[in-house]
Length: 271
Image 1 (cartoon, rainbow, N blue to C red):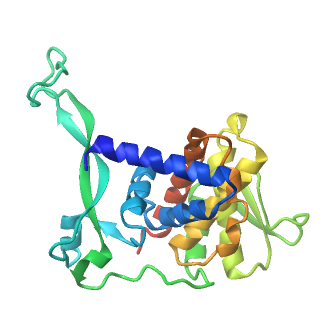
Image 2 (image 1 turned 90 degrees about the horizontal axis):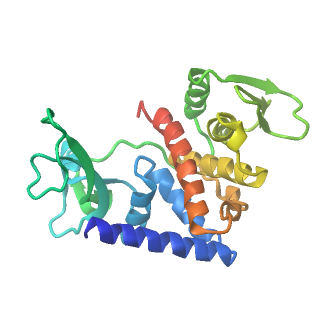
């Protein structure tokens, strides 16, 4: 699969998703948000490509990465094409139209190529470490999340009365209702942290309240699924991510992906 072909497939998938949301169907968006939980280290385009080629994928990696983990790709398995950046030295590329700057021998630029990854189901070998199984208890991940909030210089307070809200983001301070069940406390804290990351850093260009709340809830959904918590009830307002065209949709999803990646990367760093 050529990189240009891959880009066209991604564009088609975004359009298909936009059309589904325009028709009032948000289940397809929930599928992609679930995929972001599994593949949060990949770009939005590559999440679309992985889901397009292998919807049941759960854990993908390159051939050599699998070997380093004590596993090998089964004979005859077809790789999942993704788009990967590649730095090219303009001086070394034959026929290149890029001219090196006088006095410089190291002028380079980024091109994109097709690379291939394989799902764990396409491999055999040593079992993978278990990052977490679906459950209603976040376990030690709540403490890790609180530590992340502290590392970001955000104050965390607990209150008995937040005027009916479970949590509030106040720009540098998060307030959470006291005595929430463990899974709810975790999800609410992620939701409010998402507000801090997405909407408090640049208050002048914040989107509408509907978009803000939906983005924060989408981040909470992805992070919760990423550590193995089932949050099926969180999907009711995902439709509001769709704001009229495919570009706005993908912009919202990219912001959601970036915030969820920042949080998940910190939570899973010790796994």
